[in-house]
Amino acid sequence: MTSTERPLLNRRLAEFGTTIFAEMSALAVATGAINLGQGFPDTDGPEEIREAAVRALRAGHGNQYPPGPGIPRLRTAIAEHQLRRYGLSFDPDTEVLVTAGATEAIAAALLALVEPGDEVVALEPYYDSYAASIALAGGRRVPVTLRPHDGAFRLDLDELRAAVTDRTRLLLLNTPHNPTGTVLTRAELTAIAELAVERDLLVVTDEVYEHLVFDDAEHLPLAAFPGMRERTVTIGSAGKTFSFTGWKVGWVTAAPALVDAVRAVKQFLTYVSSGPFQYAVAEALALPDSYFEEFRRSMLARRDILAEGLTAAGFEVFRPAGTYFVTTDIRPLGEKDGFAFCRALPERAGVVAIPNAVFYDDRQAGAPFVRFAFCKREEVLREAAGRLRRM
Ligand SMILES: *Cc1c(COP(=O)(O)O)cnc(C)c1O
Image 1 (tube, rainbow, N blue to C red):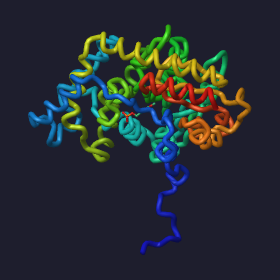
Image 2: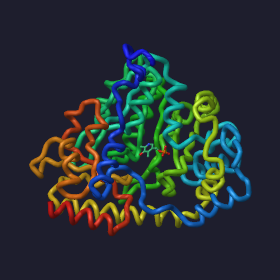
Image 3: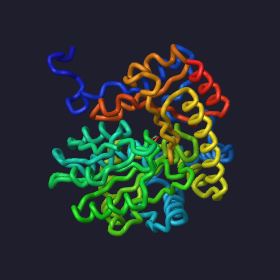
Image 4: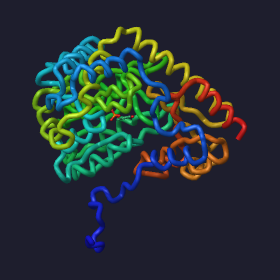
């Protein structure tokens, strides 16, 4: 028997408990509800990329430990992708690191760059692994809250500037932003870059939804802004872009010293991962522009089905400019507690959603907001919309 006097889970993580996704996905299974909670597609990505993984596995490519930084072919494909899309040039040998999904990249970057007591400024609501990774690194998270304004959640640049102190080590950004669907604009990114340079901050930017931007929104990588190339760790992932979230292939692009620091941690987390999938993702990144266009168009159509369905059901809908999530306000339905609403929704309507409050330090600020995922087949979204309207 171990001593039960002292809690088993260390105190850095004690506040976190089980993720809401596990609870809500279990509820979906128990009630047979349509799961629009967790953000994973209900159809796999391109058949030719799936076949590329099979071919790699059969050919014995990647069945043993791949190289620590990732296979050269994938690192080259990542560098070519950044050049082709954004005109950003990275050396595949010294400025690219393959990780076990974006999740490991985030954890490794924070563990590498944050000393205990350092402040990390992050946009709130935040992806749930950010808070845990900051805590594991012993950092102090300082949220800057995106607030609803003219139908979208926007960053208040004055609030961001005020959040930076002499103890701030880094900014942790996410654009396109999960869960709000906000895409940071050129003006906002320019201001963020100026602040980072002026206060000599590092920036970790999570851009896993880079290919999911809609209407006239444009994804602009922060690393392309003046003064940012040397201080920015950019994180990408194949999971969202190619609809293979189970493969867990992510990456970091950054200046050599930053990549070295992240790799120093990464080597003791997973060391390496996803051997044969790395070969397949190298092919996926080289797909023609038509793949990315078609993917975007199909998600846009799904966004509109779900957004219109939610509006018809009486929600206030924040139509996302990016990602595959829609955030709603439940107050027009006479509700105000997203947690209670989401716990009851599977029974009431046969649909599962996520209360945005879990992405906030200030749970009150997030209380009336609820997130629905639209990376599902159109007929599934229509059925969910119908159920919500009948509720
Ligand atoms: C899904 C998601 C991730 C995790 O990506 P993986 O590659 O599956 O680890 C990271 N950040 C955001 C904002 C996400 O939505």
